[in-house]
Each structure stands twice: as structure tokens, then as C-alpha cells.
Image (cartoon, rainbow, N blue to C red; front, top):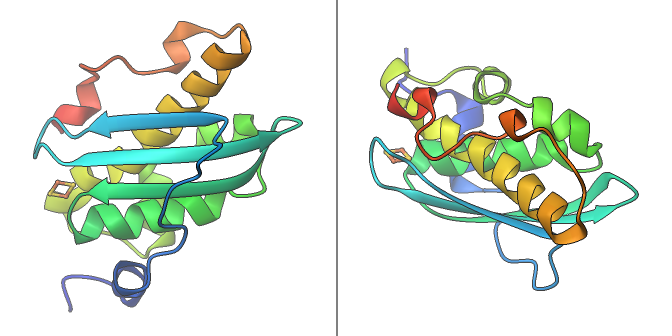
Length: 142
Ligand code: FES
């Protein structure tokens, strides 16, 4: 069996939603504790719905593919739905990732959460701090 699924290869070679949103409502930047790679996520939010999302990354192919898929999965969804998106759900939507690349998929999940937190902070929206990982979250070390 090939190391990477066709979906992973498709999203890696034709990533969706790459770029910057200049007037983003929330921006999240996350570093991967395991490899040092970086992900930046931009959100446009209207009436609690993510109307646009873009990402930039200094990450590997798996980080690009998972971020591409993750942006497709949260576009048009409510913030609450986006916060429930897990890296495992993204990996499943890509028909799986090799076990040693699962840590790459954490970047997208964490960057989305960081962007939502930034949106909340900018708008003075109260939230439960436990919803958001601190920099030393346990699964960054998986
Ligand atoms: Fe760093 Fe994949 S090796 S994100």
C-alpha cells in the first residue's frame, strides 16, 4: 500500500485555501513542538459563521494536506463546529495518515483554535480558557 492516500496526495499537490486574508477577523499561529514547523490560519467570521479561511505554512506535505482538508471542513460552519474539529477527524477525511505523521495534523487543529481565540479576544467575547490549548499541550508531544 502507498504510504499516502490519494486524498493526501491530492490536497498536498493542490492545496485548497492557501494564502492570507488581509482583513481577517482572527489569526492563529502555532508551532509544532515536535518538528518546529509553523502554521498560520486566517478566519473571516460573520454572525458566528466562518465565511472564509486561509492558511500559510512552513510545514511538511502532511501539514499542508491536513490544513487544506481542515479549511474545507470548517468553511461555512459555525465557530462551535470548527472548535470541535479534531486532527483525527481531518486525518480520517483524508483516508488516514501514517502514524509517524499524525503529529503534523495537530498543526491545523491548533491553528484553527488559536485563530478563534484571537477572534474572541479582539471582540471581547468571553470564553472558557480550557477550550484552548496552552503552548505546552500534551498532544503536541505525541
Ligand atoms: Fe513538521 Fe510535518 S514534519 S508538520
